[in-house]
Amino acid sequence: MDNKVEIIQINISGEDKPGMTSSLTEILARYDASILDIGQANIHQSLTLGILIKTTDDKSGNIMKELLFKASELGVMIRFAPISEERYNQWVDSQGKNRYIITLLGRKVTARHIADVTRVVAQHGLNIDAIKRLTGRMPLEDEDRAAKSCIELSVRGSLTQEERNTMHEGFMNLSDTGLDVSFQRDDIYRRSRRLICFDMDSTLIETEVIDELAMRAGVGDEVKAITASAMRGEIDFRESFTQRVALLKGLDVSVMEDIAHNLPITEGLERMMTILKRVGYKTAILSGGFTYFGHYLRQKYGFDYVYANELEVENGRLTGRYVGEVVDGRRKAELLRLLCQFEGINIEQSVAVGDGANDLPMLNLAGLGIAFHAKPKVKATAQQSISTIGLDGILYFLGLKDSRIEER
Image 1 (cartoon, rainbow, N blue to C red):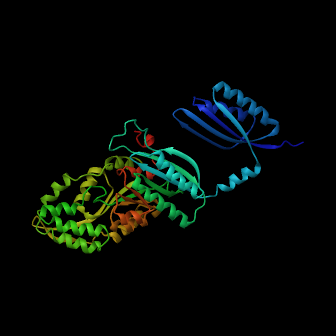
Image 2: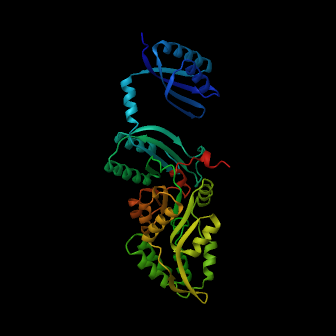
């Protein structure tokens, strides 16, 4: 008489101890049980271990008996649940569904934030497979301005493009509550990004350099008005750039060195660059600003490429003109594509980060486009956005975990 196949789900919970998984699976091995699935989570030394096995009815009783004895010896709880072949096959079929990564990022992530995000997940019929914290353990005193918290959800299910857009819009609106939410397809490209291109002004630095130059030239108000209009997308970038540069005519070039040494660096830049270089990313500055300041940042932080605008100089003073092609929105996207070709990577492996309307072409072209503390029009159009913390928040959108990226 043939033995009947049985599928059993085993759930173990309790205080984590060294060797627990080994001793439990050793019992399964002695009875030649097939492990169909296994997963383990540990939070504050509290273990949850799930194992799905296939065995036969002549062995299942002994397996469960020995596991019960071992669980008692280890001081943990163990439960068994039979799984029908029909239910198991439904689970197998569901593996073909799309997977997504939802990243919750902010100075702190509250219960309300998690409730809001997971409610949207449930409304769209998605299942949460895993939840993990990417940032370090939160201190009880959270008054530090630079504090940050990040939680990552792995979810699966089928979504139409319209449903994905609806979820994306809902998540973007949560930034008003102090939370940034990234919603990404969990595919091969998401785990193999290789190139990150940054805007410079109001992204890597907390100012627009042309405004700084204009103040030294005594035309600050005029230039600031044109800059703000251009960043909002109200006037063409190339036209605004020509107008602003013309107003700088006669400024002594020595002013640029002084401005460079006093640039207000965006929070998280140094940490971000240190880690990106450590894990092998190529980095580029694609700026509508000026090469002098881009090269200063390159030397200080180790960027691999700099493409920006060159100011014309005669007799130690700015002429009010520029040299070469303007790096506007179209040119930024073109440079992103060329850098991908040069590095031999797929465009989906690229990341673009910026704040202004002239960054939208590269943000929309890149595999991952991030609007960083961006203008409303840019934030509404970009794939993802960060508005709550500094540049090192990008590391979490890439799936990097503090406990790993801080290792030396």
